[in-house]
Amino acid sequence: MRPLALAPTLRQVRARALRRPANTDWFESARELDETYARQFLSNLRAGADHLRRVVPGQLRLWKWRAGRALGQPSLAWLPVGSLVLFTAACGLVSQDGGLGGPLGKSASLPPLPGLSKTRLPEPKKRADAPWSYVLPVDHGVRVDESGKGHFRAPRFHGEHNGIDLLAPVGTPVFSACDGQVMSGVSRSFGHWLHVICPVPTSYRKSGGPTSWASFFYAHLAEADIEPLLWQDVTRGQRLGSVGKTGNADGANVQPHLHLELIVQQNQRAAMDEHHLGSDQSSVGAAEFFAATLEKECLDPFGFRPKSQLLRRARRLDPFVALSCLSDHKPDFRRAPAPLDLASEAWDRYYVAEAFNVNRGPEDYNSRR
Image 1 (cartoon, rainbow, N blue to C red):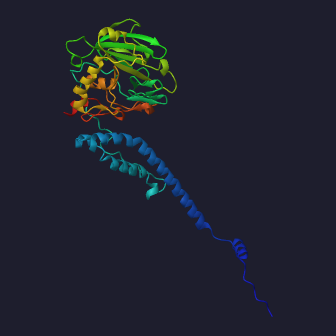
Image 2 (image 1 turned 180 degrees about the horizontal axis):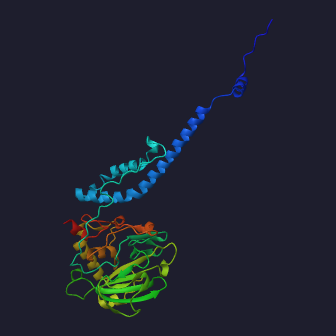
Image 3 (image 1 turned 90 degrees about the vertical axis):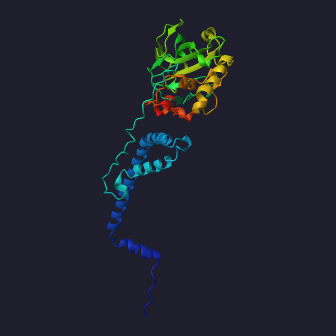
């Protein structure tokens, strides 16, 4: 009798399948197609990310400003921002059509949004009645780098920052803030420095008493155009030197900037003798009156405030607030050119105003009228 054939085991079935030639062309084609689509998708993803990085920040600021102008309420200025971000993201991801139904190997560039990249803000009007001038011809905002932040009263190892650090490329001209007197010098910590003093505007000092004086201190200049250690007359807007990296700002992790301080003293002699020492945090009545008048004449009418609510430190005042209120023209903020762009922080990070754009200054209010 013929024995019954045993059923093949799973191992035997696998062995026979491996010995049998198979047509795998379809599998190889599918795998190559998947790899092509994957490469195209990654390429589109990178292109979209690059598009977002280049386009979104500028469009975001522009649409925020336009919305604030149109709505007339800063609190509503962010309404269109969410839709703008989503729309820009979609534009970036479809800027290469290959991964979304277009022909492989071909790309289609998305045309620029009309009117956004070429729109210019109106030129602010200078204030003819302003007693002071801005100290730089450009405004690249506050210095923020590896060594720390440069806003007024920023944390420091010795306590708090007594002034502001105005970011600017080396060689940028430095101007006198007011009509008065100036002296220059050199020290280990401040490098090349300038001391400018001038009478406080009449409406910002008490009537019937001695004339209070403002004392401006400039530090870390590359060079000074003023003869050292000798008081001489100076006029508002006169060039005094240029921005540098001297003194304790010469480190590789410190970006070039102008360190600026403002102190109000009770008379000219006290302003001349002012050494701007950080260890001296005494106050004087003239500085308190100046700050109170600044709030009454500028901050309150415009809704202008430091977000920290810290306008002064003893006899020292926030130089940015004082110059914004009393200068004839503050340059519009523009992010610094590379490689300083990463250290350039806009003023609206630290200040807020209801009536004007703090990155442009109070003259922006006049431009809207």
